[in-house]
Image (tube, rainbow, N blue to C red; front, top):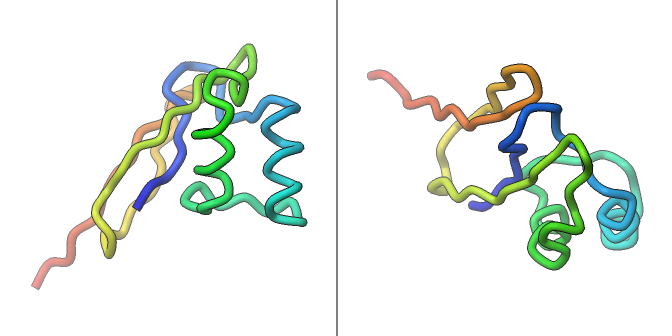
Length: 85
């Protein structure tokens, strides 16, 4: 599974051109980080998807893993959770 995170301080944000492309693909404004259309927009636009305060990167994690995004002053990382038996 692919998902998009921000790898610099400032916070997750798409550039206007990335937002327009995402809206074109999705037809609505709710944005899940592992949404295939969001991943496609960031792959297609590369650096043009970033803003002054964001540097977006696609990370891959195994399917079926529970995950969350950890945010420290806008800079994000992915945390995974494993089931304890």
